[in-house]
Image (cartoon, rainbow, N blue to C red):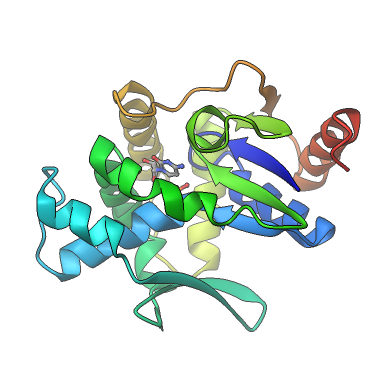
Length: 223
Ligand code: C5P
């Protein structure tokens, strides 16, 4: 049973590549960012502050009733059996997620749940610390990056496509701020694992990135 990790900053195309690889290989997919997004959303719904690490927040992380369900071919994050997909995909939710994700206790509380995704025939794990912390022994590790402009443009297109309002300048700024918070935090900062394959997707199409990722997996004898 192999685990392939795909880490990188927001908007690098990780989610898309992870989903395509999982579909193509028939493997499981862990969208770890969704766990932090759902946690932040659930906390705000329950009036639990996300500004400080508290027992209530850790307790919620430990017992979070989160699951994933495929509805009409689309994966939905579910909270208490209800889809929260529309609520958790906004930039505001992403920022709230990055706040709770900066807390060491929260990360620890969600660790076992992430390990549970590693089941045969294989797992594609998408996140920030999949290769460094959650699956350090993964068979292959990809660190996907892209320029801030490329990432803001992709996020903009994605949000528009989903029917959300989006402002390019505000998005670029939010992405840069979120990157800084993710890269500079003490608990599992965003950084490539020493043995990761660095893939810069700036200016490449999804298909080109997918081919490069597959060539790397073939070289590592994972596929
Ligand atoms: O990947 P996504 O944009 O959904 O992640 C939302 C936020 O969750 C990130 O900005 C990051 O702060 C946090 N995250 C994390 N570790 C992961 C996945 C996401 O800290 N493995």
